Image 1: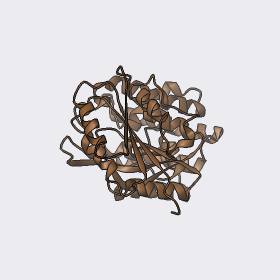
Image 2 (image 1 turned 135 degrees about the vertical axis):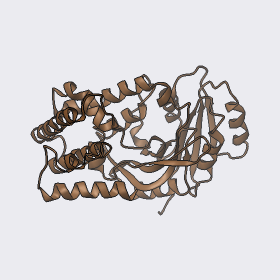
Image 3 (image 1 turned 120 degrees about the vertical axis):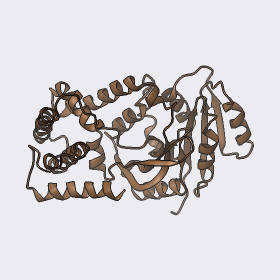
Image 4 (image 1 turned 90 degrees about the vertical axis):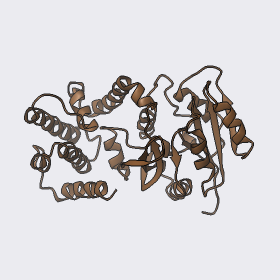
Length: 334
């Protein structure tokens, strides 16, 4: 790179004393040094303020503000977006960690690909003691990421780097207590390409106080609302199939007999492929392939390999089969 553009890392914190110092140090220790870390103390009642003050004394790249009342993560992020100076911004949660080289690799990609507005990475799941116990793998290419947004969030929240030029047009929805990142990425995808670097460059912490666990029903409702607004662009009657579609994406299985459920699911996915072919919202071949890939993932958990490989929307189109194979290889490789 001929230059090193400034990167702004924004970090809302509410009662984050348990993990925040580890998270902050993972930012400050990056090989890419031209960054600022903007922290919003969302009216914490623990020792968050004291930790922020101590760390600010160690590194001048840290700047902090405080909300007078607890306002939620989306509003806190918007407050920080008003203060960034960088060409790019990253939304880092105070319980997650960047791994070495993350920011440098993302800046290199974004500088080389001006058409890309958002760049994420894969992630390792870690527990309270930062012990790895799982992984998060999302599609790499723009088209696959967009199609996957129909089933789930396609980017790991603390991994994403975004061009700051979008701030004036798109903000986080302050009314959403959960899924605010999924909502944001889906809206931004309308104006820019997306990419995921296929490397594990983030530690995503799962613990008992994660907001998604404490507000599980709200999480389901918000996720389904984001999925539905996308499905309706393809099929005006999609709401009738929303619960089924969400179950496929979230790998949830009902109590009804599997042979009955799988038939209804295949009918819906076949309809979705046909409706997309009519509406041309997504390219037909990649769409068919990705829906098939999601169906395979859904069936594998039930050990239904025959139905996975030969669904009602089976095709001998070699390009579709190649794309499905490539997606499965990506998953296995990770």
